[in-house]
Each structure stands twice: as C-alpha cells, then as structure tokens.
Image 1 (cartoon, rainbow, N blue to C red):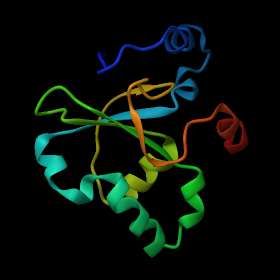
Image 2 (tube, rainbow, N blue to C red; image 1 turned 60 degrees about the vertical axis):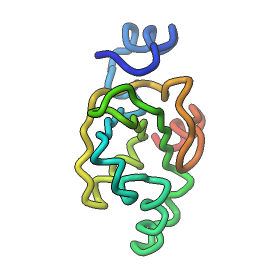
Image 3 (cartoon, rainbow, N blue to C red; image 1 turned 180 degrees about the horizontal axis):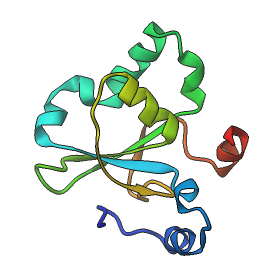
Image 4 (cartoon, rainbow, N blue to C red; image 1 turned 135 degrees about the vertical axis):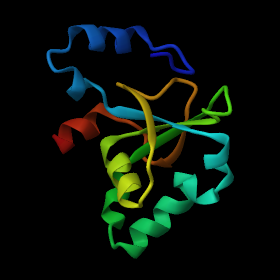
Amino acid sequence: MEYPSNPTSNDLLLRLASDRPQEAMNYTVIAQSAADVQDIQNAPSVSMGPYLIASEQTRLLTTLSIYSLRGNSREQVRMLYMNATALRIWKDMGKQPKIVGTQHRPAHTALLSFGVPFSDKQLSMIR
C-alpha cells in the first residue's frame, strides 16, 4: 500500500519486527474524496468537538489524535490519520470512513488537526 509520504525506517522496522503487527499500528489512514471534503461536517476539527460536547464525552479530548495531509487525487483529496479513539468517535458520529491503511505514526508532513500530538507515553497509559 502506498501512502502520500514514505514510511520512516522506524515504521518499516516496526512492521517487520513486531510479533503483533496490529498493536504496532497506532493510526488508521482514511481517504476523503473531493465530495467528502465539500461537506464541512466531514472535517473532524469542525464537527468532532461539538459532538463530544453534545454527547458529554469531552474527557476523550486528551486521548484522541487526528492528523491530516493533502492527498494527490480526487478520490484522496484529504488523508486523515486517526488513532483508535478518534476512529471510534468518528464512526459513532455516523461517518463511514474509507480506510486505506494503518501506520505506526502519521506521515511526517501531516499536521495535527484535532486532539493531542502522538506520544508513546500516551499509548502506554492507555494499554
């Protein structure tokens, strides 16, 4: 599977050396099409905060992490890198993400768009 940004050597090492590869993959990669991004509610930075407030789940704000990156085609205009908490919330919101892969960390050129930055310390606290 090809991503907009090449994986780092650490990403490749984790994929090759991990006994449980699914645990090593912390981010789900979601592609949003041109039609998807035309609806402002498909931007987590716009819609997820109000959803968490309305559903009284604001405590999750410190555990979710979403990065975004501009894609390179009409089918992949925006790439979202969501950790497990963010993906669960996104699905709870009724979104049907087009999942195109998983990665240990977001692409280096991706920008934090909602939540908190990735941290190995956070992962150890969650597990």
